Picture 1 (tube, protein in one colour):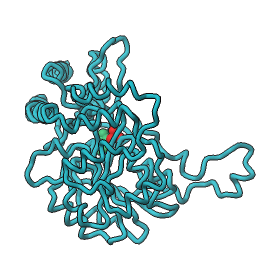
Picture 2 (tube, helix red, strand yellow):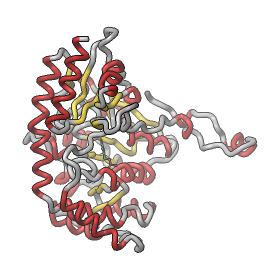
Picture 3 (cartoon, protein in one colour):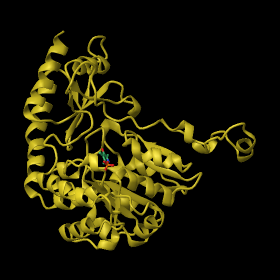
Picture 4 (cartoon, helix red, strand yellow):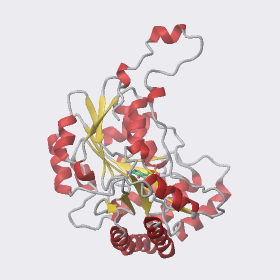
Length: 381
Ligand SMILES: *Cc1c(COP(=O)(O)O)cnc(C)c1O
C-alpha cells in the first residue's frame, strides 16, 4: 500500500533530457480515485448504493435556492462564499474568518496537503483511510504512512507510532470510510495530545452527523482552542448535495489564511453557495436523513448477519462494510456481479486492500429490502 514517492525515479536532469514531457516523480505511481459504480449493463435505472449519497435526494429548500440561482449564472461567484460562511458561523458559533470553503471537502484535503507537505515530508493516516487524503499528499511528493487498523478501527497508538520529525499532517475520518467505525472523542483527544504541536490533525467529519453516540464529537470544540486542528465537513452526504461540490472546514486563522493564499478564488459556484446556505436552514430534511439511517442501519446489520455475512462495525455512518466468504460462489466479487445484474450497485473496495468486502449505502426501505432479498438468493444459490 505504501508508495514511497521520494524514491521514485525521475531526477531533474533525466526529465530535462527526456524526449517528451515527464510528470514529476511520484505522479504516475498514484492510483487514480475509483468512484462508486453508477451504471449496470442492460439496466436503465439501477439503484446506486455505491457512493454514500443521500437516499432522500436533496433538501427541498436547497433545490429551491438552486433553481433561483439560475438567474445569476452570468456572474462570478462570491470568492469568500459569504452567505454560507455567515450561516455556518451562526449555526455552529464559529468565527467566520476561520472557515475555509472548497469544491467538496476533497479540495480542502488537497489544499491542506499543498500548504504543509514538501518532498520528503510525510502524512499519516489509517490503513483503510479515505483515498482522497493520500492522492493529494503523493501529488506533493510526500510519503504516506498507513497505521494498522486492527478490527477495522483506528488505533491511536498505531497512528502515533507512525509520526516522526517529517510528519506534517495526520488525517482521521471519524466515522471512517469505508469502515464505518469510529473512535470516541476521548481517543481523538489522546491522539491530539500525543502529536507534536507542529503536526496538523485533520478531523474529517463527513459522516459525523450519522454518529449518535454521546461519546462522539466532531472536534469543533477542540479546533476552537488548538493551534493545529482542522475539522472538515461536507454538504455531500447529510444534505444530499454531492453533485454541487461544496464542503467547509474550521481551523486556526494561520491555517485558513495560508489556504486562502493558494486556493482558486472561485472554488465554490453560485448554485452551490445558494443551495448550501438554504440546506443549512432545512432542519426537517436533516432530521429525516438521520432518521432514515437510524432506522435501517440496525435492520440491515441484523439481516446481513443472519445471512452469514460479516458486517464490520458497528457502523456509525450511512453505509455498512460487509465481509464475504472466500468460498467460490460466495465471494464479494461474485456478490457484486450478482447484485449488479439485478440493478443493485454496491461498492467494491480493491483499492482499499479489501477485495473480500463490499460497501453498501443505506437506502430507502424498498431498496434495502431488495438488497437483502437479492443477497439471500445469492447466498442460497
Ligand atoms: C464522501 C466523503 C467526503 C466528502 O467529500 P466531498 O468532496 O465533500 O464530496 C469526505 N470524507 C470522506 C471520508 C467521505 O467519504
